[in-house]
Length: 121
Length: 107
View 1 (cartoon, each protein chain N blue to C red):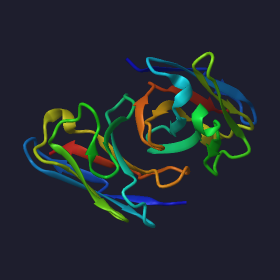
View 2: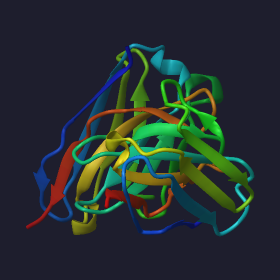
View 3: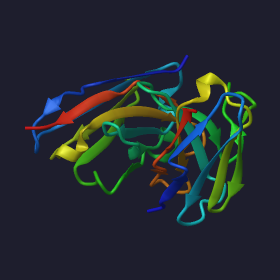
């Protein structure tokens, strides 16, 4: 059974940093692309970042809204996905979901339950 | 960036009725269009991928059609558990984008 468990969400001041983790199990993690998707309170879904699997060099991709501030990475030995978030803004406040990609790029077939990040002074 | 526009914003129907949800892309995404369902307090769930393919375990009452810029999600006969928010997402390139969602509510 595929499981994705996010952690690391917290209250942080504007300009601060936070690192989210997503522990994966139930599939061969290293082969699959992974994404972070966020949802601001009462709003829709926004794709944040993706990282490809080992077969395509673990290339990274970012939404314009976070490029240069967020860094996605993965530890295939620990089956864990990360999102390092720097220079946080109030508008980054959201539930952050970790999602597994299907064998085809961009089909998010399993999602975690989310981790709440609140950016406020 | 490819913009996805969903309509209507809210759809009010009764159980047993047919629901038709639309998603329009600002430029062609070929058939690389995905639909998700999200219920309050839950993570999204994959419904349809590549415009018309049901994901594993999704009931046959859910179907998707379309290509290029215009896509439709149809629920043939609404069950009580189908009332939720539905999002479309394009995967034609790595810069995935979502539509703003259609809320399907009980009339």
